[in-house]
Image 1 (cartoon, rainbow, N blue to C red):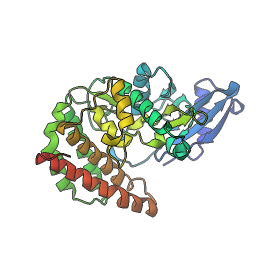
Image 2 (tube, rainbow, N blue to C red):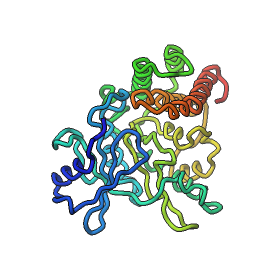
Image 3 (tube, helix red, strand yellow):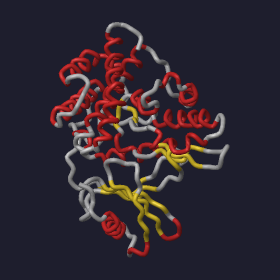
Image 4 (cartoon, rainbow, N blue to C red):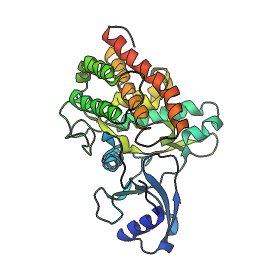
Length: 338
C-alpha cells in the first residue's frame, strides 16, 4: 500500500532530520519506479535531494523484503570507486521505524534524463562513447567486494559463504513466489527447478562476492549535457543489488539482447580491469542469470496487481526470453556453445 499523502510524510521526515517548515522544501513526485514512492525534494539555496518511501504494507516477492537496505548498501559501497559522483550519495536514511513515517532514504539528486528517452537524439558515435564510459564505471563497481554472497538485507536468510548456495536460495525463492501467486510461466516450476539444479555446479567458479546492481537497464542510467558532449550523469535505483557474480550485471545491461555484441561497452569494461572472456562457464552463468531476471519479471506482475496490458506485455516479451535462457542453460549442460 502506498503512502496516501507523500508530501506530508516527506515534510515530517525532513523535520526529523533538521529541515523545518513546509516553506523550506518543495516536493515533486518522480515517475518510473514500480515499487517505492519517490519524491524530488528542492530545498532552499537550490539543493536537491531524492526521497524514497517503501510501501507501508505490501505483499511482494520474498527477495523484496528490505530493499531499502540494499539501496543504501549499494550507494555506500559504490562511493568508494565513483570519483565522478555518478552514483547518488546517501544523505539520511532509516531502515527501521525511527519516525512515524517508517523507513526512508534521502539521497543526492543526480542530474539528467533516462538514457532511453534521449537515445534517438544522440549524435553519431555518442552512443558508443557513452557505452564505453558506462563499461568503465561498471568495471569499477565490480571491484567492490562484499562480506558474503546474497542480498544485504538478508530477506532469504544470512549471507552465504558460497555463490552456489546463495543463488540456489535466490532462485528457489522466486519459484516459491511463482507457486504462491500462481504466476503464468511458460514451463512448470518443477521443470525450471530441475534446470537450475543440474547447472548449479558452474556457480562454484565464482569465489568473490562482487557488488552487483542487477537493474542497469536504460531507465536507471541518466545522461546530461549539450549535443555532442552528452555524458553519463547518474546511475540510480540500486535497491535490487546483491553480492555475487559480476557477470549477472550483463543481463540488464543488454536487456533482451546479447552483451557479447556490445563491443563498446566491453572495451570500456576491459580498459578499467573488467574480465570479459566469454568462455563456457561465463555463458552458462549468464544464461542462469537471464533466467532468474525473467522469472522475476513474470512473477512480479501478480503481487503488484499489474494492469492487463502490462501482463500481456510481460507474457509476449519476457516469456519467450525466459524459454530462450532455459534452452541456453540446457545447451551448455550438453556441451554446446550458448
